[in-house]
Length: 208
Image 1 (tube, rainbow, N blue to C red):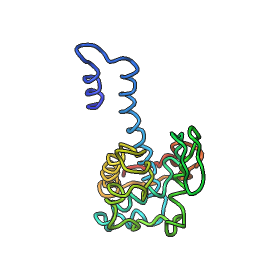
Image 2: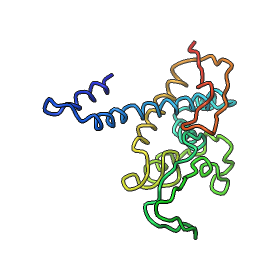
Image 3: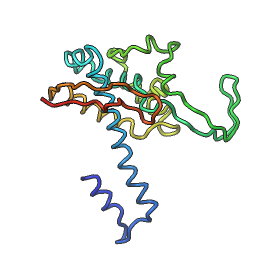
């Protein structure tokens, strides 16, 4: 409610409302990241409660494993399986010419599961990123492309990446350290043909 109140207050300039188009964009800038975070949290529920022993590993050494767990989540799960875009100019990549105005697709899931660059990509390895979790999001441009890639200020990288990381830290702490849950029978299937994607049952948890 605080953010909605601030949005309403900031929409008034000299006692005049913002144009409808501008106000709509600003409201979407509140709604979209909120919805996006709920998808990541559903995927976190999938990681912790559908996979054998992952919850126990994280709880046993939470401080050491938390950030590595979060980064591995971002690599492993296809929040967006791909990102489409339009080439702004003629460009050649590895000998392949992409004409200006062509549609191109960044295969996020395929890149994050490529055995040529990632050891055992189909395995969820909670220790994979120990010791380099900060570099991945703050220094490396293409090590983690779950929310786009490149240098943050100049290229296509989600402005909410760092807010997402912080929110996932808070939520993982709540799930692992603050509450106990019973897990009902449900469909843990994560379909690959929807954007964004999340478990069919949305990760159902009953707080005990």
